[in-house]
Image (cartoon, rainbow, N blue to C red; front, side, top):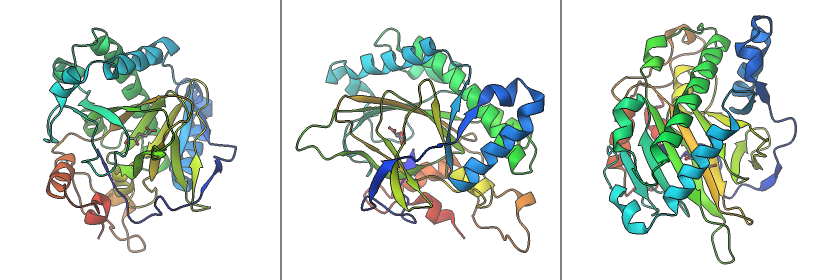
Length: 325
Ligand SMILES: O=C(O)CCC(=O)C(=O)O
């Protein structure tokens, strides 16, 4: 789902302290429920996207029991015997569900993952694991809720870019949701501390639910890694490659990685919002002018999969770099 980004610093960067407070925290209730506070929240989101490319969301309306259900479904899946999980193993990136524990993708250093599409749920859920028996229901409940949050945030970001909240509304409504359910072992002596190598995500937005600390982002101001401190009940949001393209570079994709947690095994559930597989994403013409010429060629998720497939053995897989003009 992701591509290595070579235009930004990599593993050698100093790993600094925790993200210095204040990590931007967006109260979604103030965006959705209170029209008089909406414009201020839209501005806060625009600033977070522009300055950092990431923020956290609270008061998002996803209940703790739905989030716990998703964690439990993920954990129970990863606890299954290997032969059951291996039924989903495939080198074909176009499979609707894929399980892997190897580093073939060039970024998984020490992680098992299950990736699947989730929107529309009625099209995709039939391919999801039937074991554990609660997987479909619990992960499905979370998928629907997290997509609602992603669309609400997307509207605010589009508004903040001056495009209006309904910009390309149907393409977002009909777009894809790709979920990456990740499991990282507890760090032990002798293990490499990196679970997932630096990369940026395809798509417009990624929303991450994580069970404990382990996510790190490149802080553009200090050019160093920052450990993301997960606030209770919050979701972490970051901007993806296609947001950079659509905004013609006004907001930049975020390079991030996952390190192993020394205290516990870690689960993270990433939900990516994109256009439909075949749908091209181009720089918004409203954001292109003489001072800001078009910076990227258009591309679709299908193009991204083709790129990954044909660069499977190539460590330098930088999709965004390949469409930059
Ligand atoms: O596990 C994490 O915190 C990050 C996951 C991620 O970056 C991904 O699934 O692409």
